[in-house]
Image (cartoon, rainbow, N blue to C red; front, side, top):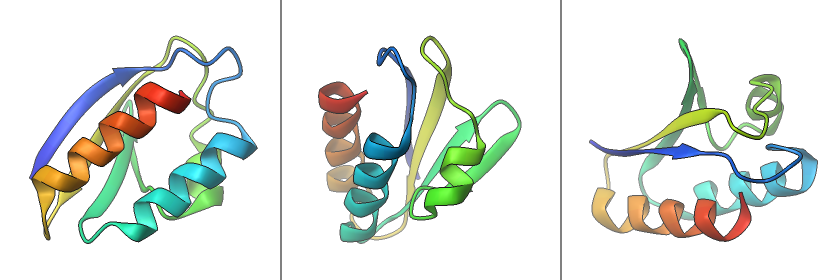
Length: 85
């Protein structure tokens, strides 16, 4: 299991467009990707669950890659977050 924490910088937080891109990116990886905000953890491949977290600008989330090529998957997710959120 590999993980990183990220503070959301996008003014709108994780809204529809980046959430859709995040789900698409997570589905392409061979690791299971989860996003955790507070005590709630959801699969990054489930758009509605991800939107249900209500992640806003300034919120800190934890991104976890489990199974498969975790190192490659977590690097891809870090790049995605830095470029899009």
